[in-house]
Amino acid sequence: MAEALRRAAAAGELGGLAPEELPPVALEVPRERAHGDWSTNAAFLAGRAARRDPRQVAEALLRFLAAEGCYLQRVEVAGPGFINFYLDPAWLREVVRDVERSGLSYGRTEVGRGQRVQVEFVSANPTGPLHIGHGRGAAVGSALASALEWAGYEVSREFYINDAGNQIARFGESLDVRFRQALGEKVELPADGYHGQDLAELMRELAEREADRYLRLPPAERQEKLAAYAMAVKLEEIRRDLAAFGVAFDVWFPESRLHAEGAIQRVLELLRERGMTYEQDGALWLATTRFGDDKDRVLVRQNGIPTYFAADVAYHHNKMQRGFHQVIDVWGADHHGYIPRMKAAMAALGYDPAALDVVITQMVNLLREGKPVVMSKRAGQLVTLAEVVAEVGRDAARFLFLLRSADSHLDFDLELAKRQSDENPVYYAQYAHARISSLLRQAAEARVLERPPAQEETLLRAGLAADEGLDRLTHPTEVELCRLLADFPEEVVLAAQRREPHRLTRYVLDVAAAFHSFYTECRVLGSEPPLEKARLLLADATRVVLRNALQILGVRAPERM
RNA sequence: GCGCCUGUAGCUCAGGGGACAGAGCAGCGGACUUCUAAUCCGUCGGUCGGGGGUUCGAUUCCCUCCAGGCGCGCCA
Image (cartoon, rainbow, N blue to C red):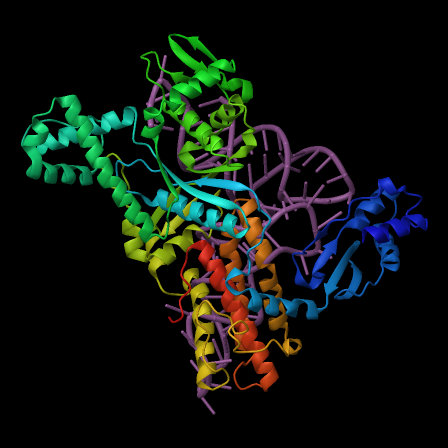
């Protein structure tokens, strides 16, 4: 295309436009399939530079466009001057062969090769159960991490455990109150204490078992011990709930390690050496305003105790020291105000702030039959992730979390999530996979196939079918399905690089829809043998793509429903 | 007051400098003696929150206003 532009310019068709004035050629996939497989607005740009009518320019360009044959069926000028390219369906059918050959690895690319990326997500305080908002972060973080892996990045998934600092001291105080209450003392929780009933229950149990051992301790030590005990229990619950949600981490990083290893003091020293800190009102400040923050931030309080922020700076320094090229933090919307100071801290440490990418997941509104479910953190009444997963199932929960862009506030309706009906997109996608699996079983029963392929096989790789006769796939629904299957690797890369895992959820729904259409329009079993085999291969390739895409999303691909 | 996110069909949301703005659900009308009807096909439905600006072209970019959410601690 660029060549055509140059030739047209040389021939004087562009009003004497110099080569360096030629616009860059950008091909894009039009929104409307009828507008071709690829489209370019080069004629608009060239027309503007040369002050010619874009439509005429486009037609001139067409004359200079070498019909280099390569899988292009036709090229035409449309509308006010778009040039649309139509691919030869033969090219699209090749994708079936691709998928069948690659199988489990179809969709994997190496665009991220050599890049180490860390994704930190959930990082809930180990002081209570995960709630629904953590669930969204868990789904988004884990799907993003998987997409990055598929795109060839070397990925590490990390959970940061806030097991130190002021809040843990307060946690210990609340636990102590609960402990003593369990022993019959008349003491009250502080208003800003930890009101969760789970903690009261935990302390009741502990009091029954080991009242004496803890009571002998001085209060400060007892609070510390209680906090450590409760955190260990809560963290194990968190780990278990996440596992049940299909989320696993490579690294669980405790904040206390930073304190124990003196990492905070070291990073403060480093910042001081770099001239980024100053003292005022008896506190140590980091000059984050130099890097675009609203105000400078305190690192060490008047009382000599470092802030949470100081620990976080040390933590991010630690991440970068581990050699990650890119660090991605997935945070809830209530932490968005924290981004500028964290980026500023990166800059103050001498790192490129762009090495830190923060993905914000917006609030989740929990609904039941369209009505908000009342949640009060104060009263310790909140719907936990475990409860949601138990009620609606892991697949439905993950799918619904990943259906919307992370930027968008999410309404999560419990009734809708577990309803097995048209209103619930989860089953639509899974059903397509189950339907194909069933089709393959039927094919085996009808002796068209020797046996159905195992989930991790493909027909071609297992030698159950040859890749001949693909040119028989000519029905519009067949061609459309091929087109979608061909998009998969790029969709994965886009989901990874734009940090938008929800793209893949949409993609899965598109593929499922295209398959259902194809299945309705095109009879597979019982058509003439070459066509029958070709359609089985197409169905099988679809199965593989659905399976791979769902795997990235952490949603199961059932063989029966 | 300042900052971030959002405002698109009755509902829930995609999309995004271009060609008539898309999907699901809901509504209406069709399709099962044959591979799963948890499906498919058709149809109804929108001045893309309001107003300015930039552009050949804005729903998309900029400004401003309005509305909702979330933040703005020497809490974490």
